[in-house]
Length: 285
Image (cartoon, rainbow, N blue to C red):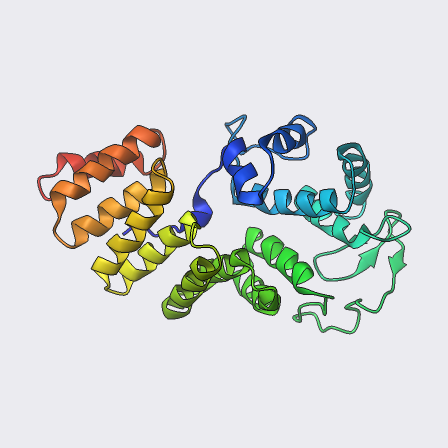
């Protein structure tokens, strides 16, 4: 079965807007203003890292920041945090503050000049391998997104675990992805189920639940979950591919071929497209 979970999917402007609960015109303005960067080789498709950036932009927008203000403060933040994504998420420390401050991934708080700022949420006392003691679930969630995007999966899982009191579907979903990467399949299953419990229309969570169920030997459960994902988003290419694999695993090759064909209709140029074509050419699927 396909190893990647929904974190590997890409998003259109409309899908990114829906994912963040925003009008698509807002995301269009962020794209035009350079606040969101499309994935390499595309002008209007976004990867998982852009979802984290969009969530940060949502928080700043809710705090009353205009697009022009975000751009100006983001430019200042990159003086102390060269990575644009980390600089953007670091700006959340400025919400409600009198001056611009940026929280580094290690928890330190800096002014754009590089001057250290101490506050009660500062992590100066944390050891080099400890995560900073942040103020609330949203801070932990933002840290988890950044750590996951940087490939620090164990740190990301710990951050999401601290964020769980917010009871958001996104937190459960991201934590499930981390547990999956860490090969903690049973715990990943529990988190995807929890995400669906919070948001029954969360197609990506249904997709990932289907993948994990298939990998732990629950073939029928995998098919059921993936069919739920497609009932919610019929054009969800990854779910078509994963459902084809799940159906093939339980011997339903005719139905599997239908979904490999559907996958090629919606995503004909991906790195998985040739694998789908090979499956269709093979008499055994």
